Image 1 (cartoon, rainbow, N blue to C red):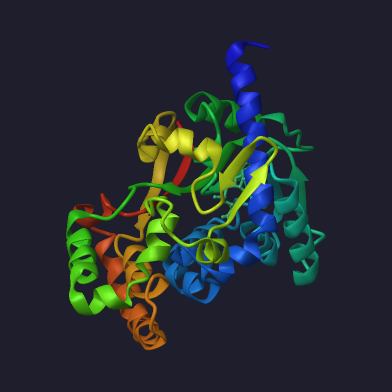
Image 2 (image 1 turned 90 degrees about the vertical axis):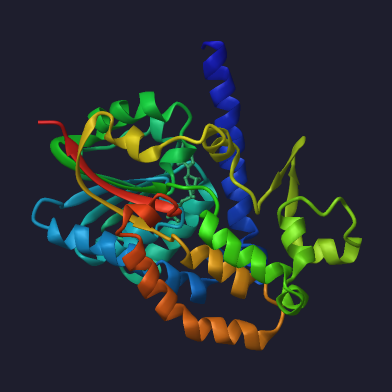
Length: 324
Ligand SMILES: C[S@@+](CC[C@H](N)C(=O)[O-])C[C@H]1O[C@@H](n2cnc3c(N)ncnc32)[C@H](O)[C@@H]1O
């Protein structure tokens, strides 16, 4: 084993522990959310255009796609959706706790027969067959040495004429325009009073330790694991390493493969929902934003079709095939 392999091994161990801990703490994270993704009734709404695009692609390609492998399947939601349409779905995740949750949910949804979940590092996985499509939703950027490993995974698990469908982070942070709106509102006297600054600063680790213990314990989910403690509100260990390099995920996934379709999501809907819902104290302000949300999402979806805006979109979707 080389020194690099050793480093990867401990990074993968930490990665698995992070996601196990996150799954165990999921109810606490939902109870005091730090991001719109942890407010299920809001998240379901915000991700609608993305889920719609994913399911449209699957149904348009249904004749070619009878089996998928979902890398880093998490709680298995995408495998479950594919299985709803009669597709055999293999899901692999490095976190045994996520896999357990995925299996339980598959049984509850009545798709247990078509879903096969495995707890493993994707690089160690063995599958009984090659699949028609490899998918990943927010998980490729957790794989160390992705650029080298992706072609290996594709050769190992995808049929020669198979497809790849990936959704991954695209741009970190707000566009200058959205930043202006959010910071302008947050610094106005009125909105400033409504904004839960303490929670915001704590989540960003910028509170300087000044938050009283009792308040901190109710919202700061930090669980010590062995000698290391993870901030479960932050990126995972492997994700932090990867995103720290500010990679261009679109370029990485297209390096060896041909693009069939590309789409972008969340130029503003996520950031504005965090500003005007997640971190807003008065219930009536949140209710107002909730009313406004469908329009924001509709507009966001349209803006994300233009390069001027989608260069700042939080996520990108890429449908690819092998180079002919
Ligand atoms: C951001 S989550 C996305 C989960 C899921 N795809 C979803 O959409 O909810 C990333 C997932 O990748 C998994 N993961 C990270 N590294 C992995 C690896 N080397 N092999 C398999 N899964 C991995 C994590 O356990 C985690 O569940």
